[in-house]
Length: 342
Ligand SMILES: C[S@@+](CC[C@H](N)C(=O)[O-])C[C@H]1O[C@@H](n2cnc3c(N)ncnc32)[C@H](O)[C@@H]1O
Image 1 (cartoon, rainbow, N blue to C red):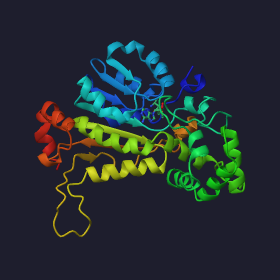
Image 2: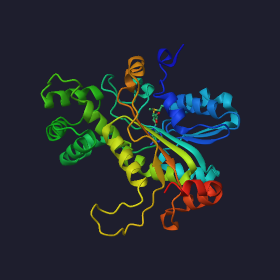
Image 3: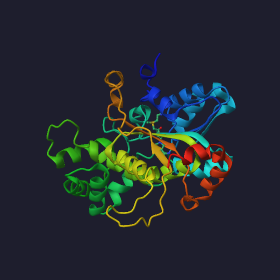
């Protein structure tokens, strides 16, 4: 039985990710979003013998599935039930660096969307939760029932890019208390006027609440810098994002970190002393093939970006103890090759 038939998540752009990570035998890899371990399995297979994988997964249910699926790899695979916001701390504590590759396959798995009790989808009636991990305090129920109308509107606008954010926020506040996904989706559909569009009128608002509850954008931005600190020279960073807010963060990060100067355009002299620490491997974003989209329609919004670590030329760009260790322990052998890229 294949993954989609078994209800398991089907990994998106699998071959592209393995190729993008330049997976090598004996390499040391981090999968920041293990999910059902589709990408993790492929990384371990491609890096065998001797490859090692440390996986992060916030959702304990996904962790249980992933650990079972990766059992055959024994001590080569370690999955921690932790948010990737703790990437650098976990790797430094475990001495798991420098890394050959770091993968982010952002967002939700099909299992989470299909699980009726989690509140991620308005297709199933469920409590307004949407937390990746039960250890997190904030849930959607708290936002809709206790936040000020203006704060709700601002979440819907910022994280959902929803033009009717104020109307939706007013409808939510006027219909409090709200407890279930179907209740919330109905109120949104009525507030927006129930126009027949390409997407359900509640789609953007549900996305916005999920992003807010899980601090998805803040965690992504922080983890990208942490990944940079952990990658050895020539190590690869591969990010698959699923909506424009995520992709914008990745794109800006890749652009800035691959430049030797980030002073404002037109500045007469450089005062930033910023040095490129990555080079972009693909200038143009990579998207799934029409065949993949046909087989797995959930892949259609995926966008992949790939970067390669190059050592910063100046000591001043060492921005944390982590990078200092990595530079000392991992990059020295490759310094000459990497420096010539700057
Ligand atoms: C798209 S799925 C990954 C699927 C996986 N690549 C596979 O092949 O099965 C994203 C997973 O990342 C997890 N996740 C999202 N944000 C996270 C974060 N900040 N820290 C840890 N896990 C996260 C979600 O719980 C979900 O299981």
